[in-house]
Image (cartoon, rainbow, N blue to C red; front, side):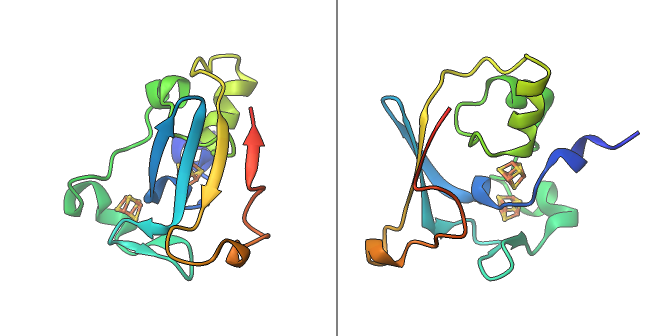
Length: 116
Ligand code: SF4
Ligand code: SF4
């Protein structure tokens, strides 16, 4: 049986700064946790992240079900939706760059706006 953490797609989106404004989840691709490696989109302290980072929190079943700040593309959220146990309000996902021009958006990451 696959472990719980195998649901993570290692996209790194939850390691970025984010804010919810009305019906929109805004994730800033230019700001992120100090332990995040932006080139590889991975955590530099993955094995000890819950010890060495005060802010880093495990994605639990309850968060997969209810956390409004997890993006719709998150593997845990997708899993919860498949199981019909995702109860967070529907929101628009907007990816922004706060420190680089808007035309520098990485088209390979995700759609700029994603409705779910
Ligand atoms: S410590 Fe947590 S929030 Fe920071 S990069 Fe690692 S997994 Fe992401
Ligand atoms: S947003 Fe979800 S799938 Fe992406 S790194 Fe975070 S926990 Fe993993």
